Amino acid sequence: MISNRFFRGALLAAGLSAASGLASAQSIAPTFADDYTLISLGSIAGVPTSYGGLTFLDADTLLIGGAANGSSGAIYSASVTRDEDGFVTGFGTATLFATAPNIDGGLTIGPGGVLFYTGYPTNTIGQITAGSTAPDKVTTVTTNGVNSSMGSLIFVPAGYNGAGQLKVVSYNGGTWETLEYTADGNGTYDFGATSGEIFIGGGPEGVAYVPLGSVGFDNQSVLVSEYSTGNVVTYEIDANGDPILSTRQILVSGLGGAEGAAIDPVTGDFFFSTFGGGNQVVRVTGFTAPPVPEPETYALMGIGLALLGFMARRRKAA
Image (cartoon, rainbow, N blue to C red; front, side):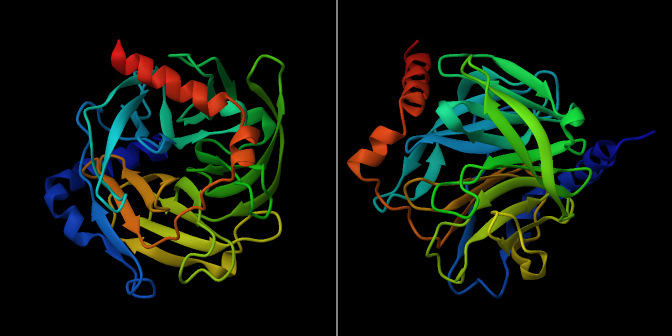
């Protein structure tokens, strides 16, 4: 049987000849056009195509998946260039951060500073601890109830309904679920059962929660990169941090292979990548900048993120 991912690749191949026109096709939906702007920052030198998920390691460093969905998949680190107002305008040449076979649209820093990523079509979650250059643990989550194959994952941020919960979305199944997790005593995590399955459709490949207080978002909301529809959509969330289907709105349309999702910790801008569709990094500006944490908040964050940043700088210096 031919997989859905075969058709995904075939559709992209057919559209690559028009890649130069993708930027002009991308647009903010009229509902949000007065307050939000979109700009393609282009490709990142040193990252092999196709692009996977992305996340900010810190204010100065972007992590992004390269050679996505293949056995040579890996995570790359690129410095960010910012203008005088703090907005990202470009990237330095990327270097290898860690191997991540089959990396897909999910890439996020979770509890303890562990870097989590999703694998396609293996329906896996990989975990990379501070200082590691390869996965410390890879778990197939099909038997946990996660619909194969998973496209992305995210931990609900502090301050939002359902804070701390792990949400996973399936590219093939079009589902959104909550996945239990517990520390395994080795610096990584075990996974339990899923619950609260919701069908959202669209081939979801990236999830990010909208910065609180953003214009046009009166209630807590989440952004979903839909690969199959070529859209980024938004939903209001319920008391559990899950999307309320009746509130779905399109934020961005006209995309080729929407993949990944991340929020800039400095400006609150929304970032996503495109798998094969020009292999771009795209920025949406207009969201509220995150508040500057109080000193005690930094202490509570622990040393995980600091260690990841330190190891990244050591790799650059090597």
